[in-house]
Length: 327
Image 1 (cartoon, helix red, strand yellow):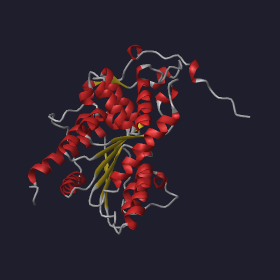
Image 2 (spheres, rainbow, N blue to C red):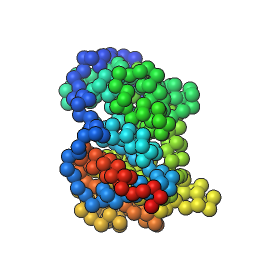
Image 3 (cartoon, rainbow, N blue to C red):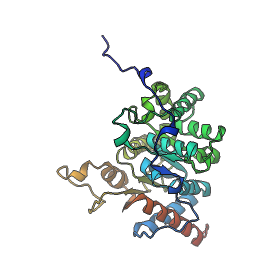
Image 4 (cartoon, rainbow, N blue to C red):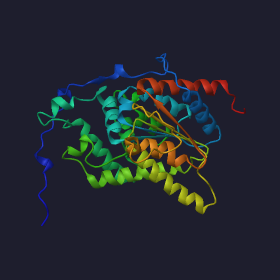
């Protein structure tokens, strides 16, 4: 006999207009603004690697956690896509939700502590439209990121200019969304379709794999993602190297970086022992050590994403302006 299951149809949704939002458009960082001071020796190195990668037509991939967008970096990522320096942006499901809400109402983020007490956390009607995009993606056999970006553009969301998903759709740069069922607020909603979401996110995973297959000579940056980014990247790299080996190619000369908040204070070229808690921090052992051990290089940048991402953005533009394309 099947175990008893919760019936989503019993849930009561409320409109976003009744929610108190923690973030508004004023938090967004604009390309023309002077960044706050942040210095790290790896930032100019990464800028050189990114510019060189694009000039040899290799992939430059960012996998960003939701906090990166909540820290206001969306417009900077959009400008990197527009200029051709960023060829693939990957997000987790929460990142897509924040981007969608910014585009729709110019605000995002709720107080978990407040709304969980009354059983209202995540149960906001308009955000559930992302589930409609998932069904459209499954029907049209496209990725979830493309489908959400298409919806934002087609329905002319008031603030679509700050949406990385809409920008990806307009610019034809893949912005993929990598979902784990049960982790995102829209999975609470009565209109959630797990099969459609799984199909749409699987399409995005295969799009991501294709980008990783172009990583030789390129760069992969894991920014603010402790689990999803390293794990999705690891599987995609294994698949890509498997096929490359059959074709007589290699994918081992590339640059990786991790941008995060926690201190590592260690030699990032080698793993720490299993007795060290840092061993279980996936960005360290996966992105910084194991996947570049046979020909690549890695960098760790510790700091707030509101400081580190703008520093990298401006360093890339400076490097692009100072180094001729034929140098």
